[in-house]
Length: 455
Image (cartoon, rainbow, N blue to C red; front, side, top):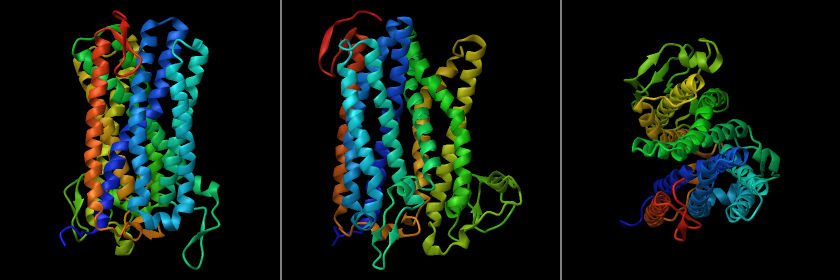
C-alpha cells in the first residue's frame, strides 16, 4: 500500500522538526527573564522610566513566547510515547526522571511569571523584582533537566539491565549527573544567553537602522547585546572544552566531526569537504596536525577513525557529512559572533558608545538569525552524531521507534499546526509592537489602556 511506509524516517523527521522549532524559544525563556530583571534593576536604581517601560513590555512579550513554548514543549513530551514507544517502554524508568523534574520547574516558572506580570503596580518595586528571580532560576533548572535527559542518551548511566533486558536498579542521581551532563549543560546555558541576547538585540538594531534611535530603543539594544557579547567569547572556551570531552567520551562522534576515516596521529583539521561512500575525503581545507593538537595538546595525539568502529555501530557517511558541515557552521557563526562582540567591547571600553559605522548595526541585525542558525547546527551535531544509537551502546534508533506505518499523518498535522501557531504568534507580537509605537501601553495582547505618550 502507498500509505504503508517505513515509520522510522517519519518519526525522525517529526522529532527533528518539533525540536528544531521548540529550541528557538528556549533561549527566550531562559535568558529574557534575566534581561528583564537587569532592566528593572536599572529602573529602580536610577529612576529610569525608559528601563522600567522596557522591562514591563518585555515581560508581556515573554508571556506570549512562554505560552507558545508550553505548547511546543508539550507536543515534544507526547512524541516520546507516540514516536518512540519501545524506547520509552524499555528505558522510561531512567529517561523519565529528568523530565519529571523539568515539569516541576516548568510549573514554578509559570506561577512566578504570572505573579510578576500581575504584580506591576501592585507590589513594591523590591518585592516585584524578587518575584522575577524564580523565573530565572526555574528557566535554568528546567533547561538543565532536559539537557540531563539528552546527555543520558549520549552517556547512559545509573541503571542495570536484567536478563530480560529490562531496566532495573535505577540510581536517579547517576541518571541526572551522568558523564556528559556538566559540559552539555554548560554549553546549552551559555548558548541560551548568547542566542537570547543577540535575537532580542537584533530587533532593536533593525529599529535603529530605520531611524528609531531614541534612548528607549538604544537601551533595548544595549542590555541584551551586552549580555550576548559577554556570552559569545565564554562560549568559545566552553565549546573547546566540550569538543575535547567528546573526543574522550565519544570518539565515533568526534571522528564524524573531523571527517576522520582512518585512525592515526598528526590528524589535520578539515574545514568543509565531505567523505564519499568509500570514506575518501573530497574538497575541504586541511590544517595540518590541528585536530590532533586541539584534542590532546600534541600533534602525536591518536584520533580514532570511523573505520575502527563496526559499520552497524557508526553513522552512515551521509550522516557523517551532515555532522561535519553542521559543526563547521556552528563554529564559523560562533566565531563571527565572538568577533562582533569584541568589536562592540573594545569600542565601548574606549568611548562608552556603540561603534558609529552603520555596518555595526547591520551586523547586529543579522546576529539574531546567525545565532539561531548556530544553535540549530549544534543540535544537529549532538543528535545526528549519536547515530545509529538512540541510547548510546544499548539501543539503536529503529529498535526504539514506533511500528505504526501511518505516522506520516501526524508529521503533516504537526507541521500544519506549528505553521498556524507561528503565524498567529508573529501577528500578535506585531500587533503589540504597533500599539506601543502608537503610544499605548497594554495589559494584554488585545487590551489597550489610555495613551502613555512618548517614552
